Amino acid sequence: MNPLLWPTASPPPIPLISPSAINTYMRCPRKLAFQRDPSLRNLSKPTLRSALGVAAHSLHEIAATNSPPPNQEFEGWLREEWERLLGEQSVRVAEAWPGRAVPPAGQWNGVVATRVRTLRTLAQSRASSPSARKSRTETGFPWIERRLEDLDTGIFGTPDRVDVRNGQLRVVDLKSGVYQAEMQPGQRLQLLLYAHLVDVACNQLPTVGVIKDARGIESTFQIDSVAVTRAIAVARQVMTQYNAAVALRDVPASPEAATCLNCPYRVVCEPYWSSEARSAGDLRGTVSHVESRSFAVDTGTSGAVRVVAAQGCAVPAIGDEVVVLDLLPAGSGTLRMRWNSDIRLPSEE
Ligand code: SF4
Image 1 (cartoon, rainbow, N blue to C red):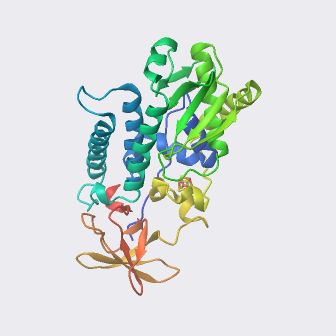
Image 2 (cartoon, rainbow, N blue to C red; image 1 turned 90 degrees about the vertical axis):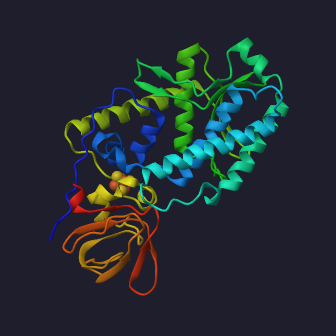
């Protein structure tokens, strides 16, 4: 047998921590360590969902910081910008999955809903605040994706927007997904830390935290200095614990089905494969038979399973230990790789 090796995450310590890194750590410290290990960076590839999110975010930024050329109306300009951004994301996904049959952008799940809702939200907010550009020059707000940091607490971040509404300073996080559930504790923590960073930057603590979804619907909460102080303490504690674990080269894993489901590091995460978090669509075993575009994997527990390989993916050799992710049922004793199913072979190490 040609076994897979299971790498120990070897990231550098964190000098400054962001709210998203804190949220990742709180769900699974090992995932943050994998994310920050330069040798594993290629495992985190864009998904169609994340690519759509980047395009929607970018369109918000463009609408807030640019204007259509003379002689072009706002909505038509935005539609053109959306197509351009989606094209860029399509290229980025194809580059991350060389040889794979990446679906055309027009067929991505949620593309129509994201486009319609993003364009509608931007047109509505333009109509409801025609003086936004004027107020920007007078007050300095809104800030759009401005990177902020506080070297004293070791926190940095880039809030999507900091704006003034009805005389209140707000920090806003845009969610590009077509459905935003109720505000999560991690999203609240993120907004509290952004509020602290705004306070450090301009000596004014925002009073409202906002999550705004792709439909333009806002979930808000009142920010107060006690909650901000608690959030800073959490951030400091996470950074201390993480850096201590990195120094010991022993960052713990927290395999949970919901956390691991979309984690790109499953292919290198041994604790995942020996936990109950393991998904029925993921397979680990030893290759016992190979054909031109399929191979059989002996899983040890449930016998041999035939796997139909995706276009552009390397086929393993007999005796290789393999892990394959996100497989679909394809008839009795057979699973099929999706276009973006990841596979790890001993020969790639
Ligand atoms: S697969 Fe699960 S346990 Fe492993 S790093 Fe990812 S989230 Fe953590």
